[in-house]
Amino acid sequence: MKRTNRLSRSRDFDAVYRHGRSVSSRFLVLYWFPQEEPDSPRFGFSVPRSVGGAVERNKIKRQLREVWTARLDEVATGHDYVLIVRPGLPEAVAANGFRVIRRLTIPPGRYQIRIGAKEKNGGGVGTITHTLDVPDFSKSPLQLSGIAITSGSAGRILTANPDEQLKGVLPAAPTAIRDFPRNDMLALFAEVYDNESSAAHRVTISSSILAEDGRVMFTASDERSSDELKGKKGGYGYTREIALSQFAPGRYVLRIDAKTTLANGGTASREVELRVR
Image (cartoon, rainbow, N blue to C red; front, top):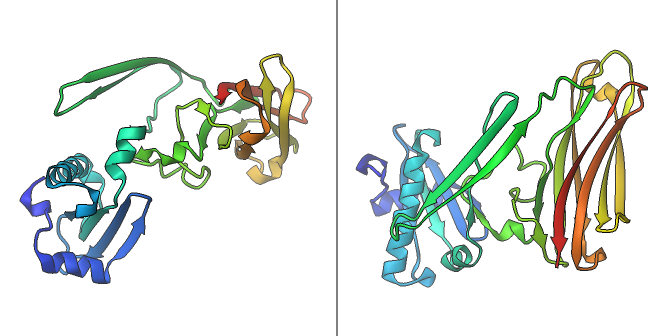
């Protein structure tokens, strides 16, 4: 991080603390305050002794500087920022890891996504690939997105860059984890794309949990009206929370179905396998 982007004087820290606004999470508190003469953003980091020894605290500061430097172009100018680390952050990262989210905008087609991670100090490297089919959501009368899932336990994993568009529909950042404790609360989000605008109709959206033998263990449904779209093509957001305490340990399938009342309106469904332990 360049010196011009560093907050170093005590009086500047004090100004941000005393007069700035703040937002907090379990392990971090962020303060920000407008600069007297708007310029490039400046950052200060506070890691108290309760977090760890000097070596650990300096390591955390260095890592935070690297994160902010990489995303400097996305930070609003004309402000000073102070990020405070709360006790428990290193232990939480060591126990649960951390989550990185990236939103990609790509046209319909089949793709192979490759994700790589490299440990800067130790030199360890890990990679993973995933084949992704992106459908054309405008072709069929009714289409259904993939299912975004999170839970109470998944919410304890630190997220480097939460997706702003999902904050209003999920209680925590979406997770790739599909193994949940029985005392957990599952939350899901999906979108139904309705491309039939010629006649008024309704769309039923249901979520179900199926056991390995096909038995329906849970089901709930909502009904939406095409009047919400005002005669245009569009989408309906669907959210649901499901307490996993009602299920015995084992493997299940989470299924979402969408069906329109129009005779030729079509249906759509998505499934995700998960395990309750």
